[in-house]
Image 1: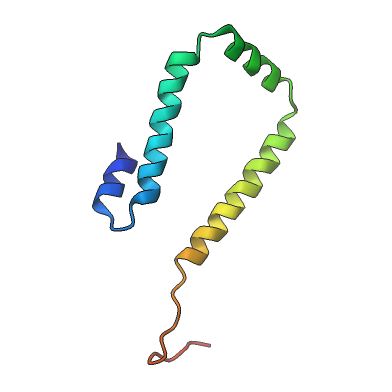
Image 2: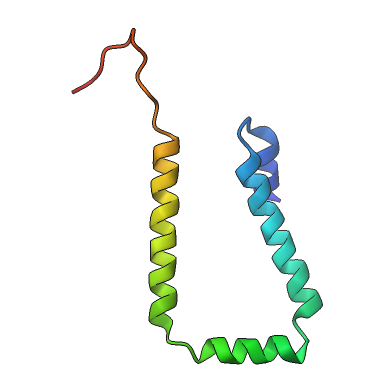
Length: 85
């Protein structure tokens, strides 16, 4: 709800709407599919995978998201404004 509220108030709120939609979708799918035997078997198989690849993937993904956000917020200097060194 917070992400949807930020998305509604912000002029550039689409990423917040997308995040809110993904959160709602994951919650609904968990409630609908969480009791299936196939889903539970998948969880058991994933639990057997070492944690290091997941940690590295999360770190790389987080760094990429941070870099993209940092560059998206960068303002280009206009010709009439002096540039700082």
